[in-house]
Length: 132
Image (cartoon, rainbow, N blue to C red; front, side):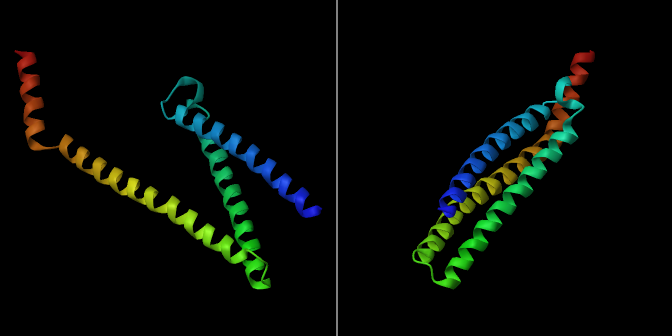
């Protein structure tokens, strides 16, 4: 009975945590637009998001420790749970790494193109044309 209550408590905690994290992430994204409302509180929002990340890492670490204990004690279904954890982490990490790599290359190439010599000459020509 206590494991059922703990499971329900963890479920409600996870739901509340996800809501708070979504709100904090939205506020942080809004603050990066440098609006007057959030500009003064950007560091506070950054600290709140950092604390939420640490809290999430603690929850995930606790769940992984519990899974390890279940594996060592031979609890029925723990090997299947391990396979599911590995599969879900693979499904989450690989696309994230792919998107990250493509984004970094895109940003690197686009920033390099901004400072290209031809672009610099075109901008100087536009300035000279505007002055004349």
